[in-house]
Image 1 (cartoon, rainbow, N blue to C red):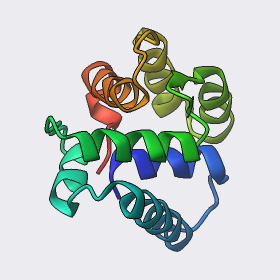
Image 2: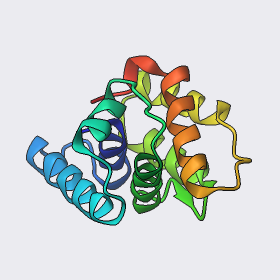
Image 3: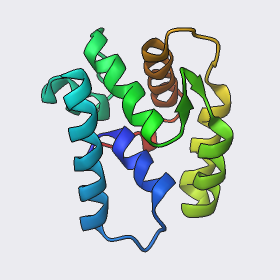
Length: 133
């Protein structure tokens, strides 16, 4: 799963969640958001490798997943929701740099798809070690 799906796992499940459940959640979110936005699988997979193609469908796919995770709402980052879950559910060695990365990301972009994409790029730039694929 791409970084977005991994982050969804953090926000929705407890640590003892099985890899199977994580994969199912990722697949469900990918399917829902891809039906809406038609981002190619190659582009979506590239996000996990830190490849940010300038593609409207991919940007809106990112927004869709982040909204499903409640990390964004109507183009605005809801970092407080995400940070609370991160701090509760993942080990501090991973949580701390992830929370720090959220605090460094701008929240002033009006277009929801552009805002989501900017958040992903910012998270990757500020926390590449835990930007998982």
